[in-house]
Image (cartoon, rainbow, N blue to C red; front, side):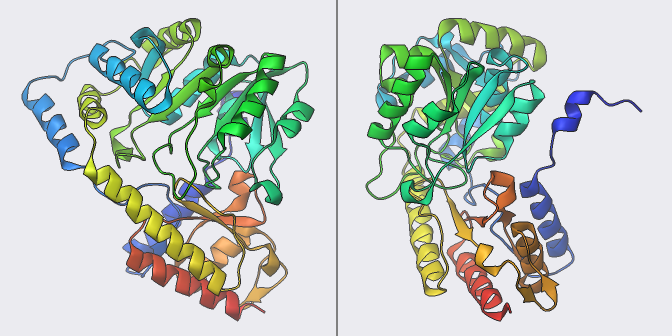
Length: 396
């Protein structure tokens, strides 16, 4: 059998691998607590579900324009104006089957074989895989502890070459939870404007920010920067709609036109019922969304306190729903005869010993860490963190 060479560049998802193992253990009757999957544990708000039911009852089950319902694209324009101070026309909006699909579309439209794509590290594990699939070359820029693992403008400048085409920026970040300030983004934008570098700004966690941090889109820096930026967003995280599969992007006219042409042949339109549900989601100021954000914030605070009480170290998250826990101090130690030399070893040993699932940092370019999601109940969070603390104390 001859599989296309492009498939050899792909690495299996460590997130899904750990999650699958944990699910198998649960199905076997074991008491597994999972911090692994980046998915809100809340149900989709009732008013969104009702909108989907109404669409079904009204027979809105036909094809839509490949780029999305006109009324939904207008609603997305209003959202971008109200929340981000960005003016777009509906023709600049492309609705896709999830933000991941939008990201693929952007890279497919902009990146030629051999083009370099700068990715701040730690990074969401899918970014480099998609870059490689379209023939691009991922260039990683490692954030440092002093700047909460965010890339600086100086680091970006040092990474630029004659082949640099695109920067992928994710704020709030998966996996670190870091939020780039307006000042930081303006400095980064100055570099992009200087060298003519496009930016894919992944803002999927924009509504999940805590404390004094504030979301700012790099596209809002200047007219020039807006012409270099494709904003990617969606409804999966904010509205607990992961299974509904809807993302969207806002782009300069020519880029949006190219993506629309490609999507019309690749997938056509996103699910019509999901589009009507999303229209409802964006058209209401939902108390349910506020309640979810407050719950995530409370869980974050509890997790950080339990990490501190266990004398462990982590990155400090300002957004999203993840904590990167440092485990490299345990490398070279064992638990019940199982030696740990990597974060993969730590994750597998912990799952066997304490039935707690989390994601190794290797998946995110952060081999000293593991990622924990606090998108689970407070009860499970406390029990899971207690198991981790016990596990760490037992390592020799």
